[in-house]
Length: 314
Image 1 (cartoon, one colour):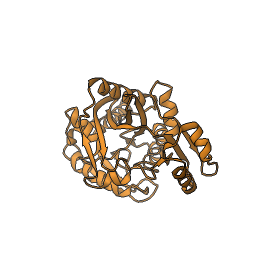
Image 2 (cartoon, rainbow, N blue to C red):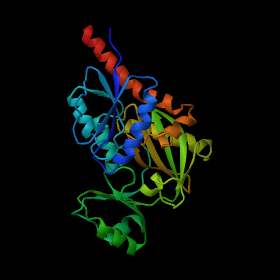
Image 3 (cartoon, rainbow, N blue to C red):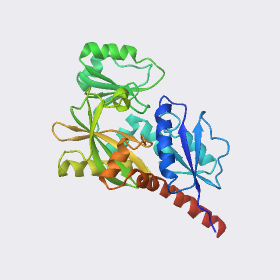
Image 4 (tube, rainbow, N blue to C red):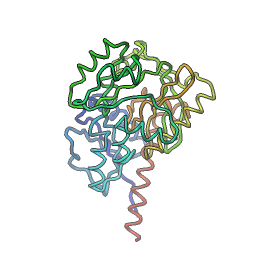
């Protein structure tokens, strides 16, 4: 007789998004405890926590950003034979790389904003950027989540100042700014859920707009009409599959003033408080927060049980 796994909730981590992760972890631990035996692990280093047992635990991670979301933790879990919810190491690493994600989805017909990725040592000149992309731009780190380091640029002087400051040890991505409406679509087990529209009061959905109470309005479902809704859902499903995602993710788009959709990014471990975007998308599809987290972890629990049964009855 195979016993059901204990759900090990991971929260915290070592990235710039640690506090956000602790909030996600606490909310998910409370909801998961309604349907599963659970154990909470606060992660304080880039290593597996003591007491994690592949024979007993299935991991539900709410680690955001570097190491938690970029395939680092997933590789450690794979190496230790621990089953976990969400994308595997390869899909996690790909989707954390914004320019790599754009290449992967563009091959499958999903539009992406024209852009230029560069390492810190090989910055393009302002003239090169403007010749390729114009002077209404977005500059962001290529491998960070949660809009950390996001800059909106209008004109050559702002571009030169932003390029001068882009000196940290990281790769950067500069893209043509798409004017329009920002959308987010949750994907659960390969199926797109509701479309949420994000309306930051400042005009830019940066870190402050995401995490300051009242700084952003959210419309769920997005009032964009049936055709645009279906297009966003179809593009989200295509992008999810193109990047080899598993179980769940959140896919973000800009809907241009000409009604064209452009992929911004895929977030494989998105914020998971009740007020976060993925739960908003799920509510449009009739799933409350408790039902959503149950569905997020269920495929991993099934993988755990199937493997145990095969082991017992080879």
